[in-house]
Image (cartoon, rainbow, N blue to C red; front, top):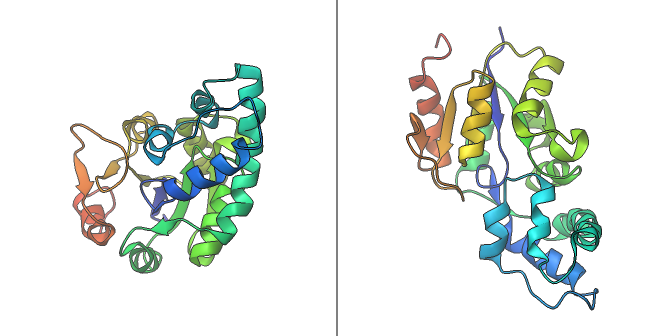
Length: 213
C-alpha cells in the first residue's frame, strides 16, 4: 500500500494573499461600478473557501455582476501568478522533496482551475506531486474532492495537511487524520496533530501512527 499525503494550498504550501489581492484590484479597477479596494486582510478571510464566497469582496455591485467580476478576477489571477508567484513557506520545498522519497504527494484545494498548476510551475514542485483536484474543476466542496482524488488514484489511506477548520472537517469526513499547519492563515481548535513550521512535518506524520512506519 502506497503511503499518501494530501495537501491544502493557501496557508499550507504557500502564501499568495498579497499577490492575489494586487491582481484582483487591477482587474476590479476596470469596472467603474466598483468603488472599493480589497485589502490583503480582507482577502485572507476568504482564502480556502469555495470561490463563490469571494463575491462578498465586491459590496458595491449586485451578486450577478459580482459573479461576472469574480470570474474575470480568477482567470486573470492565473496569468498574474506566473509573473508574480506566491511565496512558499520557509523550509517547504526541502520538506516536500524529502517527503516525496517516502510518500505519494497530492493536493486538494478549493481554488479555481489553473491555480495549482501555477503554484507547481512557479515553485518547481511539479515533479513531486502525483495528482490534484480542486473546486474549479469539479464544482464540489473539499471533502468531496478528497474522495474523488482518493478513488481516482486508488488511495486507501492518507493524511490531510491544512490550516483551517474546514480542512480538518473535510479530512474527518473522509476518515483521514488531519495535521494542522498552525503557521497558516486559519485557526483550528483542538487539533490533535499540528506543525509550527514545514520542517516539523516528517516527524509529526510518524507520530500519527497512521502508517506502519
